[in-house]
Image 1 (cartoon, rainbow, N blue to C red):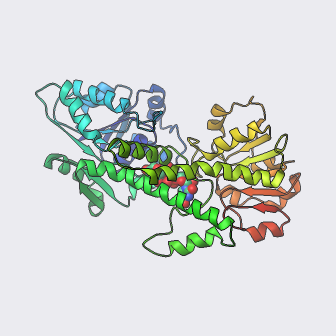
Image 2 (tube, rainbow, N blue to C red):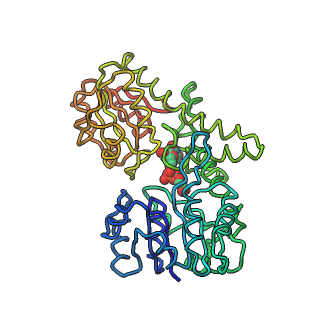
Image 3 (cartoon, rainbow, N blue to C red):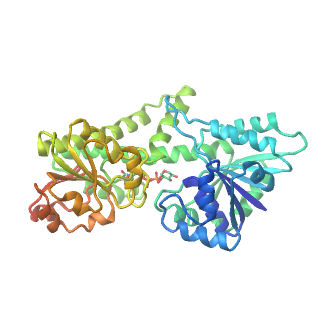
Length: 434
Ligand code: UDX
């Protein structure tokens, strides 16, 4: 059985490498030929721990190869995993034109039975559209199936999420499709959850929206804590000890970013509204998340009053630690707001500086890039912690204090222990705690 993976972004690349590592014969393709050239040489275009090593290993043992030729990849594969992106459109819905384009290409190159597996996050009922598209354009001789196998990987731990999944959701509507996917995921027999296709598609959007809701919920509670003597870290811990709630995704701070949660929440709102269902709950989740930026800017103003010409060390640019991804990162909105205030910003991140430079080029007025956290802190009027990188947790705060003009920390992710930092002589602002 030969598996083709269409699209080699985060999801596609991890899927291709992961499936190859399970022992399958995998070919990856992408319309961006540069990505394919790099991948063929064992170079991963993204920062993802462990991915480079596993890519090289599977290129070497022959389980994995890459081709820029989509048509040839389709013709030579028995199973096709569709991992193309579904970007957000202005009205919040997912843009499905790449999925449609790939479906047409599959139809035109159908040269035998094939199983088409949706891996990208797609609105419920997408499989029906894929099926219809392929039926409209295919050579009548050959049959095919469509299945849904949503991906739950998190950036920064994508590979271990793929190789040690909590569950593998498989949405199928034929015995043949079911058996093929069971064979592919043989190793994870115990973890497979088989449903119909609409259910599998909805599981993905529902899971991401639920996690986003948990984050907005704790951020709402965090605002309540700030008006009282409660401490959000302890509230979260106390809630999380109840196994029905669980302790994960209850970290208050600057809210969620990334390529999934903001987009998926809005997409589910649109799906629900199109079906005539009131989606206020999830709209509020989105609103609370966007309001985290105001919360943070207000804290900086509380500390410094006027932000014009203040030198601010911006520590952390990626939307979360262990990734170089800045898509929908809170840092971008915060930087934009501070530039409007005419602050002088010194930006530092362990991995995301290059990506941030494409957003805020080096010549941008008010922006400077530093090579280390301590360099960014030198002569700063305040330190703004935006992403909870391990490196920041281990920062030599004693040295930091000596370098800064004013020892003020505004910690958007509750990285530090308030008592410890204050003992060192810092004025310390955190989220949802005193
Ligand atoms: C998410 C889902 O976890 C994953 O299953 C799905 O496939 C893709 O979307 P990812 O976007 O990589 O993964 O990041 P995740 O670790 O889930 O974090 C998302 C955002 O929420 C980050 O900005 C993070 O900082 C924020 N977050 C997370 C919080 O603010 N508080 C938390 O308690 C947890």
